[in-house]
Length: 254
Image (tube, rainbow, N blue to C red; front, side, top):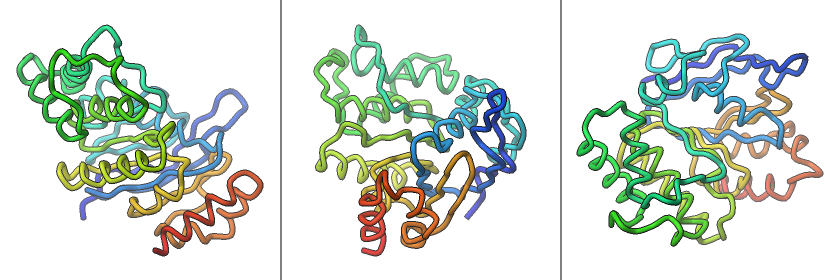
C-alpha cells in the first residue's frame, strides 16, 4: 500500500489549553481508520486541522507528499480532502440535486456546470438518493440527511474522506446501512476514509484500524479487536460508555 497521509507531532493550543498534543499517525491508500475517544478528546479538532478550518500550533500534515498544514479549506478541498459534518445543514431552498452539484462545483474548482452535474449524479447514486432535480430536501428524514451530507462530500471528488459521526440520530437498521455504505464507497472509489464515530459497536465492524484519543493525546492505535481490549481504552470509557467498549470488543472479535 502507498501512504496517503502523514501526520507528525500535531499540536493545537487555544491559549493555555492544549486540544491536540503531539499526535502522529499515517494513513495508507484505501484504508478506513476509526478515530474514537470521549467527548472533548480532540477528534473534531483533528478534523478541523486536517480540513483547514484551524491552523496547527505545531506539527506537519503531509497529504500525498505535500505539506498542507495551515492551508485554507478551499485549497485543501480542491487538493482532494472532503469532509462531512455531524449536523447536516443543507440549503433547504435548493433541491437535493442542486445541494450536491453546488458542493461538487465548489469542491473541485470546476469551471463547467455539466461537470458538477455529473459529479452530483454519481454521488447521489452512490448513497442511494434520487437524482431527480426537483426532489426537495424537506422530504428527507435523518438517514436521508446523512446520505445527503455524504453525497455532498463525495461530489467534491475526495481522495481522502473525513466522515464525522455519520451514524448520529439513526436507528439500528439505518446504522448498519450507513456502515455498509461507507465500505461500498471505499470499494467503488478506492478512497481513504477517516471515520469519527461514537457508536463503537458498528464502527469496529467496518474499520481496518482504530486510533483512540484522550485529552488530546493518542493513547492507543491498532487493529479493532486489539484496541477494544486495551486496558487504557477501557479505563477511558469506564463510567461513560463501558458497555459500548464491551460491545465493540465483541464485534471486533466476531
